[in-house]
Image (cartoon, rainbow, N blue to C red; front, side, top):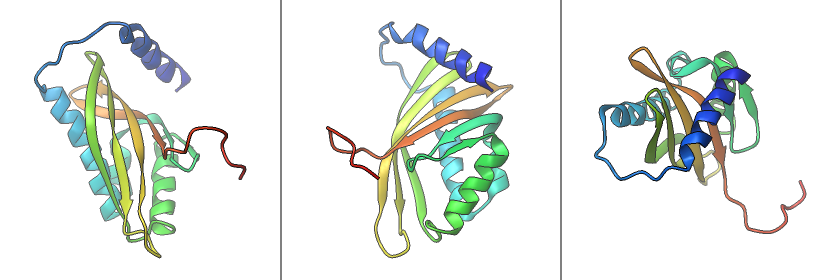
Length: 158
């Protein structure tokens, strides 16, 4: 797992210094956006197995609340727990704002997420970065990092 993440981030850092010109969306771009949409759809209908299939076996997820989930099974279990408790009945929506191809089989997708209809009222908004790899003909999520912005300056004590 660490090797996969290290390799993907090494590629990302190596490519980061090059400027890129805007290109029309590719089939890979559309497929990557579909994976993120399928993740939202599976989460919203409570289909944890379908959600898990979108992730590599050794994937990682850092939630916006700071919880680390390591491996497909942990991601399935963690999402099921949060969607069955604090976010029960809520709707998860991600708007992918950009897809960047880091290599022919490695991509980064960034976008805003929203969890609406949270029990007791309210909405949680933040940002998510997805790292995906192409395995055969399918794109799979290898890492997700979600965050909710906080004001500049010192972080309030918990």
